[in-house]
Length: 314
Image (tube, rainbow, N blue to C red; front, top):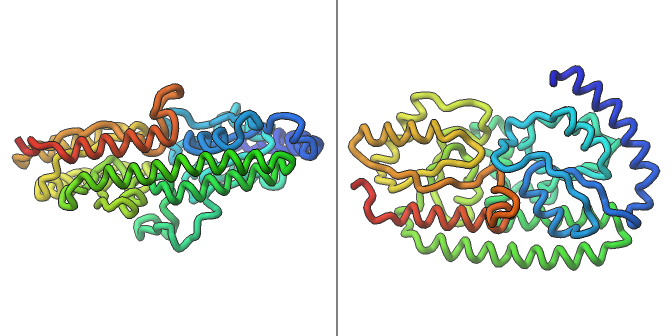
């Protein structure tokens, strides 16, 4: 769908949506709140805290790259008819920026990263002055996102405020336990081996919080492809440091990482694919990795198993 029909569709539908929202906002306590979320990680929070009080439509399913995601006509309809939209922000959903701008004042929108103090965010020089949006890999920062969702639901439906606060306490308790688990698992890896190599720079918050050096073949966004020079430079780094494993990502094509592996092999060192990590999208619904807690546990368990390989370079 090109830009002009999309914009026209949004303007027409958003006007209709504004009328519906305006008429029903005071009555949200009498029915489930219709919410649209962008990423699966946000869907998990909203469903976890909202429970039966929310009816959630997630735009981005398993394997979907939010950096490249463009709204379809159906997405625009869902967004315009929603009571509220919860999204990541920090330019993660870059292709949806125009849609969100045109919705302003018509549908309630909440960026779940708004409550994270800016001094705690990473702003890599290569990211053109913007913040790294992948905050969910520092579980303590994602706890702040959960608090933002809690407060947003209370604002939308104050009649059920106590319900949201109670469910939020339980959800945050699970995240606190998850944070401790990731820390314990990370400590199993000697400091010299805590080097995480992935397809793109999605894990810098994870690295800062849990003590890993992180290298990504692509930058923070997957919108641009890695060149041969990037592959060669990363291969030299892996061979020199004798890193036992590198990792593919569920939402990024594995071709580039396979190219790095071949380049490392040409230097006389054998690096293994340590497994598939979930970076910008969660796993399939109904699987452990289809939840935020399960996704993060899968990632740290895979990283530990890959980096503790005893036959590195054999």
